Image: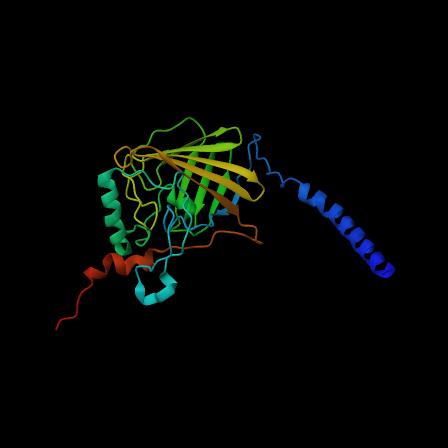
Length: 270
């Protein structure tokens, strides 16, 4: 009996020592993010979203993909939505157009055609992107379709013409990079579910570095011709930390040639 009691006391003592050793580690705050020139957070690095927003911004169940011949390979995974409030506030006519997009997504989704992704979709596609930061401007380079955009950090510039990636003007609000995006051409979709906007789209993005390896991303989306009110998405972005993390090439034009131009091929004479 005495031996058993001694064993219990010894085990309790060891547990107490281990708990005291672990507590300081648990209490330590996350590693603080580095600072760039000028004292602003250093956003340099290769980043990636790890969610299913590119399939559908809203909550969605798993379902078959558009290529049923590939079985589960092309199926859509279930995912939690990133839209605040749950649903995108479409006007009635726009909601009907979104349904039409979904029905034709196999051929009409700009992603299938290797068109540039637009904003905000470029941020949460299943490919990494790199941020290169300087005091005068910030370059964002995307692996998908070799897309990129330059964020002007000087005097705001007006859009000279509408483009896929828009005209980007940025400024700092404390430790948050705020990017005002206008001059978008309205041809990009937000996801594979057919969510969309027009060329009246206005996006305000917010990048906040919460610690060494994470950014919090928010985008407020406004288009009075498509939506009944502005709405917002938010998600974490993760820094790629593997050795020699870098962007690789994904020039997908050649993969889309048959889809885009196959109908124009010369048919053999009978």
